[in-house]
Image 1: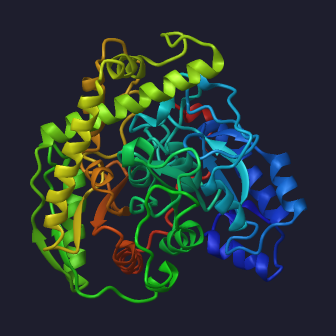
Image 2 (image 1 turned 30 degrees about the vertical axis):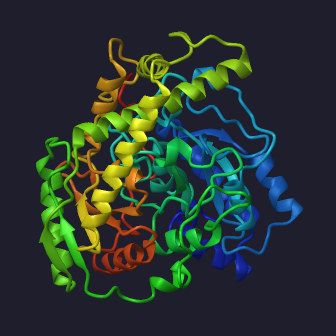
Image 3 (image 1 turned 90 degrees about the horizontal axis):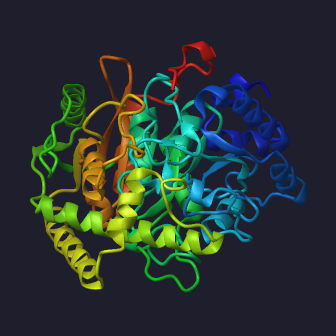
Length: 486
């Protein structure tokens, strides 16, 4: 199968070709590997190529799932696959391998997906760009001097470049939605408890972390969520099941929605004019589609919310670093941990149990306030990020002298709209509805009521028809000489 032909299809389209016997899973795998070979020297998005494992999957016999034979990539954090590298973007964890699949990985396999590689993440996924000392910077396929976002930037860049139709991603503060915005993709963060996180986690990041994927089309997001959603054995909690499959939901137009919109993040961070212009255009588009738009947003104590976010992230980063150090016999230091995460680790070791419980109490207060707001509105619209994709190097996790607080504030000054919905657990989706004056993608975030992905996906499908984005693609290849020098 020709690479240009392969990369024009979404996941459902490729699976249909396999079902119709117009192409084999091995031919799709070879097309994906050709894509990796062609663009990864410039993108630096794929860490490990899993050709032999993919062949073994296919030769063993793929399940008759909805995505049978479709090539797939997994991000090297939280989810893991048996025998596959799992570095978490860190020198401290370099060479780590788990002997078993997580539940979500098992469900991806059951859906028929063929894993052809792993993707980059910043160290411990604690950055809004994808640059690490271990792997170097991942480049945005729309402009090689800019960031693909983070922390799922490797997956985002690979999907945007056409290597795979969608890829695994996760989101503890915006890490699905930010790279969706930066790469011109669909980035759905499902409701907390919708996607399984076992057996290693009950609720990653004390409930902030959610697993899913980055896709090019809304229908792929809906079908993939149908394939992998639902509680796993012994799980801590789960979201109310949908009334009907999400893929069926998007065949129906949404009812007339009451959509709140805001240009003002809770923190008061400045928002770039390109993002504002894209927001205003999206408000007009939604009104033209028949929805009611009201300028409004929930009121929260942003300073307390940021403190709670910092403490939860710091406690978890500290736990990860201690666990890896114990397993590998290393001592965390400047030699194996980036400066910002080392500061976060040292701060995390000072946090008391009471302070962590206080952070969780703050999260509850914020969640109740936002939940009350959503009794009046179906959806909240905002920009996904406060600026278009950043130049590489601007969010430098290895810059010396940064405190944990300063680093956390830097991340959420760039992405001040996203982490609120990690706190509340509500579903939120970034859609590629805007463009900067420099021809870089800008995403718009739509947040919905708890467990109501259906409304978000219906609205997203309606917007996808009104403003088609499936065939908007960056150049598949550029000369290495065009790359910025680091």
